[in-house]
Image 1 (cartoon, helix red, strand yellow):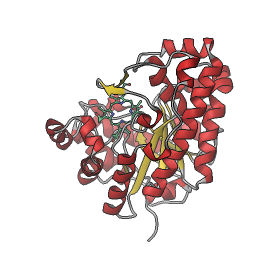
Image 2: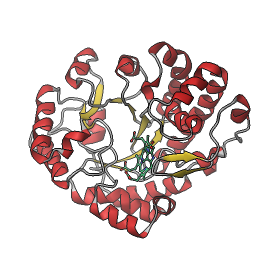
Image 3: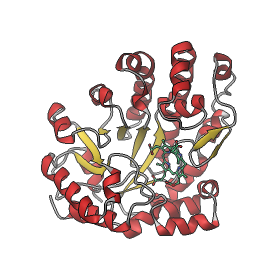
Image 4: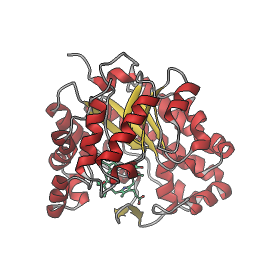
Amino acid sequence: MTDGLLLRAIRCEDLPRRPLWVMRQAGRYLPEYQRMRREHTFKELMRSPQLAAEATLLPLQRFALDAAIVFADIMSPMPALGVDFDFDPGPVLATPIRSRADVDALPEVDAEALGPAVLATLQRVRAQLGNDVAVLGFCGAPWTLAAYLVEGRGVAGFPTLRAFAAKEPAALGALLAKLSEAMASYVIAQGRAGADAVQIFDSWAGALSLADWQRLIRPHLVDLLDAVGQAGLPRILFLQNAPHLVDAYAALPAEVLGVDWRLDLAELQRRHPGRVVQGNIDPAILLAGPGATRTAAQELLRRTDSRGHIVNLGHGILPKTPIASVEALVQAVHGSA
Ligand code: CP3
């Protein structure tokens, strides 16, 4: 069987239309998901491969999307690193990592313990979908994971993390190296379990200057990307709120560069010819309803080169998004080449 549109777009093939999927597509805006959440906590859903597979497939039952992303969180593999956390609603750590001693005290990573429920979920999802729909695995980029481990929870600008980078650069390096190695094993295992490609979420990429990013973060991100590439797994690298880093990210070894809505995607394509890109409608536009969504989608399709473009939002879909807006997005993408 031939591959679906998403994998073919990654290979930059000529296609009848562009592929589409939506970041956080299995989340809270779906009434069916809200129903599941009335009976189970988020943790319960993630611990059960059967329920997590069901949640993964919900958006595909409603919308003609070209990919399913496994229902899990970027923190799902963290128990294998000895990290104790809860969700409120985002990740909250019992004891954040704040010193060299804290980093050194992290246990050796047990590869078998890296998200076993996520791997079992991927196996189920892959078995239930045809090859026309791509199954995506994912992980957090080392820096975005470190943001939670050091700050202790999502905080605007991550000031504690930035102070740690300034005060303890070697300890930060040791933490990023550990995360990079663990995430490489984790997503390679996802590929073996059925993921056709993996997205690496660097949602908090933009916290440091370009110079500090080059010095402290880039080497560990490259190690992760190289390891995944050597395993033959296509890589979608997503960065958010980091316009000062986008050209540096465009030079990294990943098949696809995913960007948020702040960037002009057409201009990015012109600056990096031949680079496959993903994005980038502002998720807030969907809150404005199907009319505004259709206009934004058509404008994006008109302004950008269709070759090597995977349509997506510029960040996760927001909880109050009307279903009709997602339908309008799907129709706009299906209605044009
Ligand atoms: O949004 C992003 O930037 C993507 C990367 C990312 C994920 N989780 C991937 C994810 C980040 C930064 C997180 C951290 C996180 N975890 C947050 C963000 C807010 C914060 O406080 O920092 C939140 C709210 C969680 C907890 C969480 N994750 C819940 C409650 C859910 C269930 C579904 C929902 O949207 O409410 C998730 C699911 C989740 N997190 C998915 C992914 C890829 C799977 C769902 C999907 O993508 O379809």
